[in-house]
Image 1 (tube, rainbow over the protein chains, first blue to last red):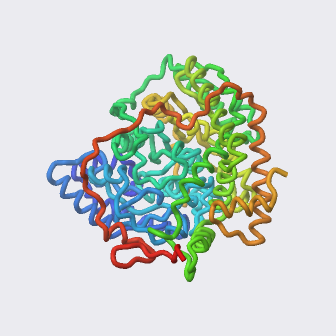
Image 2: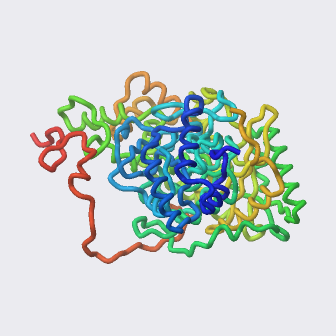
Image 3: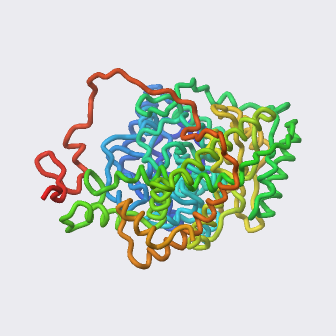
Length: 486
Length: 95
């Protein structure tokens, strides 16, 4: 086995036993990135030199007998999370040269433990998109089929994990941006409960929906990363002061008596690929064979989730992105001697089309005369969607459904049709509206060899239940062991 | 028609965006289609339903008001497109 193929868990064992050094491991992964980056284009910035320095420091820490679970482990970070001294662009021209003066809380936590940051991964601009085609810089390609998208918006992180260009990665999820690319690339991805992980230093897209989470090669690694990144942070006023359990204790066999809810509305959803249905039905059977009780549930407002989301998210985005004005940081349009003209020229040259489209939709929905019809209405429907979940969780412990209605699609296929692109998030965005945790794990492949993902959702702060179910499923299957032929 | 080209132009002005002819036409069509889809929400009876702006119950996050360390001025200015003498430079605002 090559070093870059290691999981976090396996690499930790070898580092702790001093059978390998973090420098060796980091070099092996950087070489791997070097070999594949031309094909996959997963990274916006590769910080190789800093990574080696961090690896050397980690080796010293280990030599001193202090080897924590992420010490010396090379990870990738989505380029929407601020890293002090390392360019953070959000895949936008408007932040092309932005060097954050501080690190996000999650980065501080990773670094405190001695994790190695390899670089910053590609994404849809400001996390707005489902394919990485909205990046202001490049298209990331799916390692399983280079003519396909990796999903989005954390597509670079998912592709990097799938192609062994890192041992694990951080992404962010506003409507499915961790889970959908994890599904397209056969990675494990989790969006924790809203408020579980500090958003301090995560560049804001839609503040009531955004959440940082891990993308990993297996479920154990997901639990390990969660242990480090979760927890209350006084720097994020929406962070929740709930105790964080040791998530690795969830990695135990046995699911007897667990009740899994299958939402009727999801199976009936339009645009559902028959190969995805088949893989999901097969997964349900595997769970039943493990003693899980299958419960039919209903989430009656499911069909309104996309509409509510595409009012709420752009509304919040239009407000959050007002800060990009060419004054304090980021790009400024040249030769403008009038303030308003400078703003307008900066913003229309700095933002790509999807970001401008969403700013316009959001501004429209919040404008006088339309606020009640759009924003208030969508926020009321959001209440009903949350109530659906509350009711469902009275009869089940978990909800199971596909992560996405289809496997990865071709690059360019949906680029001129934003509405069709939005519908690829149909199964994931309800979890963001409700703030509940959701997770995608590999559950099969299409005939063409494209990965299919299974989504699990649980009650607020019940990540442990997700991990337990996912771990048992992973133990019973081999999907996560398959590697792309690249 | 949910939204006309004229309205797109007006909203773009509110959001401080300059759109060229081609984008106005393209955006108006696409945004009209998206708003048409959003109309779906009108099928839902929301009488007496409270709106949700936050999915998790939150109380105000207060902290003691005391002096803390802050980012140094040079660091805060480091990303400025234009700066001088410890200040951000902007086009003249008052005539």
